[in-house]
Length: 216
Image 1 (tube, rainbow, N blue to C red):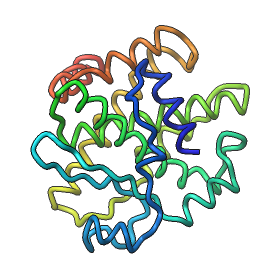
Image 2 (cartoon, rainbow, N blue to C red; image 1 turned 180 degrees about the horizontal axis):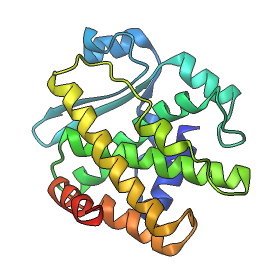
Image 3 (cartoon, rainbow, N blue to C red; image 1 turned 180 degrees about the vertical axis):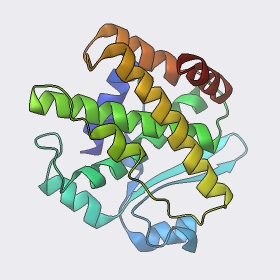
């Protein structure tokens, strides 16, 4: 399933990182804690990163229950209330993996904020494409509110991590609202794809500047 997510995201954004995300997948919680420490205990998804000079060691952790549920309730066949949250977790992990790998290949540093911001945009774009394809009609009005408004954060309010998630949500929500206004749900249009690809390739200050200008 995560290979399909990788293929769809790479096709959407027009690149191939040359790595198979499934080769980096671990589903054992004990191994994830060994690699990432107790901080990830109870977290169903995490991209584990260790940098040694110019070398990046990466593992994508998705807990076994999440992977098994998505194999049984394939979101590419039917995305529904019982698998959409788990699908978003897996999608977020693959998004992080691809964004890190693509930027590393270009020798570009990234921030945690832009990593999270891009993942939010990726979730919105992928859910929009899947829902429109499966429903064969207009997208449901609840999608943007479900992703960006009806949310809570694990990190404690006021912590740096909490603020990072909150800001990533804020900027991604504004960008996706801009897409709605400009393209009016024409989610298979070449102009939309061009806009998403251009945004993907911007660095964090450029992304934020674009959002502020487009949403002014």
